[in-house]
Amino acid sequence: MFKKLISLFLFAAPLFLIGCVATTTDMDMLQNDVVVLTQKYNRQQKELKLLREELKALKTSTKKQAVTRDTFNALREGQLALNDRISEIDRDLQSLQNRIDESLFRIEKALSDAETERSINRAQIDQAMSEITKLKKQFEEINKKVEELSKLALAIKKPEQQVEKPKPREKPKPQKPEDFYNIALEKLRQGKTV
Image 1: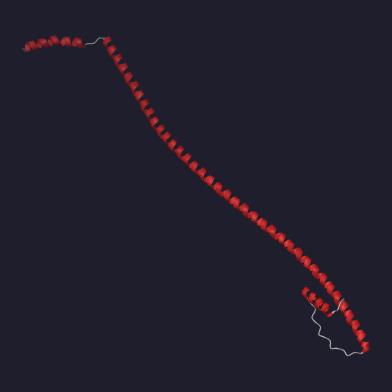
Image 2: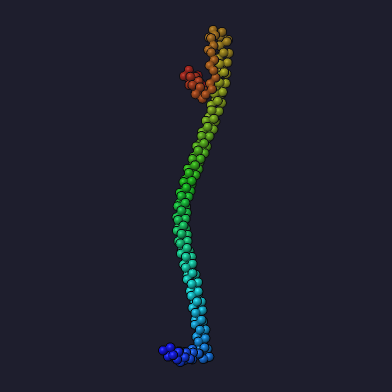
């Protein structure tokens, strides 16, 4: 059996070796196939790398877009709130301006009324002063005439040698228009005329 085995081995080994021996064409084909497979593998690796980069870029752009959208929405909401606040401040300023204008109008009117009243009072005071001056002149004229009449009456009484009556005390000179009026009224009642 050992012989059979050796003979079988000797017979199968060359057949095996012949089967293992490849021709150059087979090697070239095999090498071409390996090169093609290597190229395909490299292309797929490049494509895979590109896809990974694109996926990363897509993720970052999505994050940026999300941030940009969120930022844009936040800015828009902030701008709307700011516009509302500005509108509210504008209304408050308009109200305040109206109140200031109203107060200025009242002040100007009060000043105008006070100036008018002051000018009327001045006119009345000037008129009263001129009337007082006229009354003083009239009173002085009346006093002069009274003195002349009293001197004339004394001159007439002296020659007759009549008993002199005690002189009444002289009344203080009037200072107010009412005093002038009262003196003139008293003389009129006594029957004395100018």
